[in-house]
Every structure is written in structure tokens, then in C-alpha cells.
Length: 130
Image (tube, rainbow, N blue to C red; front, top):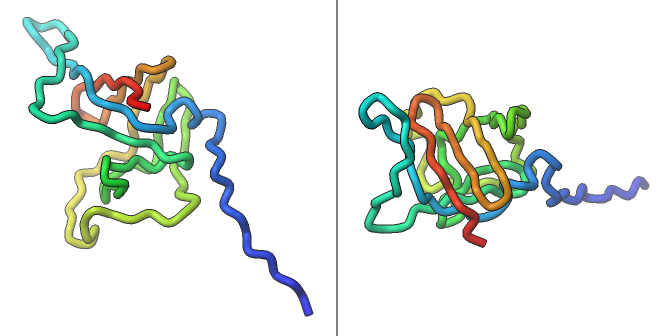
């Protein structure tokens, strides 16, 4: 008989992913004012959070993933492929969601500050919440 050992999930983030892991809150958005790009404080009535899991999966505050999340990040100019290493649960039945194609995010992270450019939208600035 051969003994089978169940593979353990490595919950350690890759070096490139380490600076992003955790909870972040939106503080500013980039807008064009008089032809110039400027940062404007986020003026929502409720805080907006995003979370990055150890394997790169982006989660909503409720711990569920987006059906339309990209599979690639460019973190400080280094390509990172998002490959879930444990089960992912979703907020919606993804078969009912029509996603706009967004193959990647460009992310700049420096200490407790992060900027994300999501496809054609303006950049968003986040601060670490944890």
C-alpha cells in the first residue's frame, strides 16, 4: 500500500505579493482637472476597502471575490500571475455576470500606500488599513 499525504496549502505569499497582502482603504482618486491629472480625496459616504489574499486573489470586505477580477497584476513593474491556492467564494453567481475585459491591474505599492490603475479607469490611491 502506498500512503498518500494530502498536499498542504502554502499560505505564504510570493515575495512580489507580500507588500499587497492585507486590507486597504480608498483615500483618493485621480481626476483630470483643467487638463491636468490631480488627486482628489475620495468623497464617498462610506469607506471602500479592498483586500489582497496571500495568493493575489482580491477580495471584497465581505471576504468574497469578484467574478471579474484580472488574472495578472503588474506590481511595481513586475508581472504577477494570480493563481488561487485555496478555494475562492464569490458574491454572485458568476455565470450571470457579464464582465468587461480587464486582463490586468497596474499596482504601485510603497510601504503603507498603494495605487491601482484598473484598465481604462483612473488610478485609485489606498492606504493600509491593518
